Length: 355
Picture 1 (cartoon, rainbow, N blue to C red):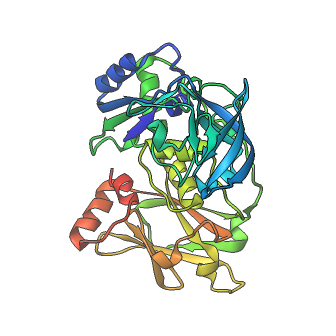
Picture 2 (tube, one colour):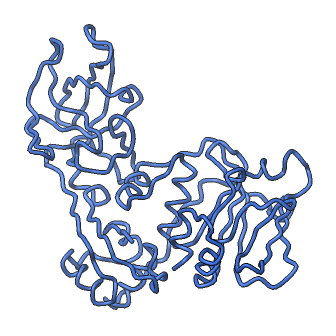
C-alpha cells in the first residue's frame, strides 16, 4: 500500500508531525514502512504561463514559446508536441538544477535563444504522467506565476510505501491508514469534503434491477451516471503516479483514484452494451455458485465474478456515456477460496478484494 503525506492530510492534521515521527507511528501500529521518498524540486523550478507558441522557423518539431514566469517574460524553445495546448506549465528557469545534476543554462536552439526549459514530469524526478510536458491546473492549489513548485505541498509530496500484511485489508486505502493514524496520534478523523460537479446521476430503479434467488454472502450497491467528456485533473494523475496506479483512460483513472482513497471496490459497466438497445431496464442476477464464487449475470450472460474479474465486453470506458457503477464487498476468505479451487484468472481488483 502506497500513501502520500498530502493525501493523508485530507483526513488527518499532520502539521505538527514530521516524516520521521509519521513513519515511526506507522511502524508502531503494525503498518511497516518499506520506503519513504521525499519529492523536492529546485527553487528555480516555478509555475509559468505559456502566452504564445509559434513554430520554429528552421525546425518542424520545435516551438518557440513566450512564457510568463512572474517576474519576467522569457523565450523558451520547446520540442514537446503538447505545448501548443498548454497554459500553465512547470518551468526550470536559468540556474535551476534538475535530477542528474542537469543545470539549466542560456542556450541557442537552431539559432534562437532559449531561456529555460518547460519540463515534463520525469525531468523533475516525478512519475511519468503524460506524453510531453506537464500541464498544470489548480487542483494542486492556486497557481501563482513565478511561485516555486516546491511550495505546493501536493506537488512536493512525501511518498510512503507500506508493507501491508494480508490481514490488514482495513488499511488498504488512504482513508483506512489515516483512520489508524488518528487513533495513534489521538486526533480527529476529518470528514470527506467534496463538491458535486455533476448532476447527471439517474434514478437507478427506473434503469436497473438486481435479483438474487438465494441469500448471497456479499454486499452490492449500484448507481447509474451519464457522463460525456470525462476529464481527470492534474492532482489525480500525479497522485496515481505516486502510488503506481496505472489507467488507460479518464474513467479508469477516476475509479482507481476513488478506490485507492476510500477502499471501496468499484467496477464500471457500459450500460448501453448491457442493454443492447432495449428500452427495458438492465437486470442483474447475483448468485452464489457451488464452486465458491459469486457470479453476476445479465440476460444469463456472465459479466463478472465478484471480487475476481470482469468480462471485457461489459467494461465501460470514458466514451461510454452511460455508466453503471458497482460497489461490492465479499468476504476475502471466500474470494481467495474461489480463485484457488477453480484456478480462476483474476484482475487488478483481486489484490484488494482478497484482503
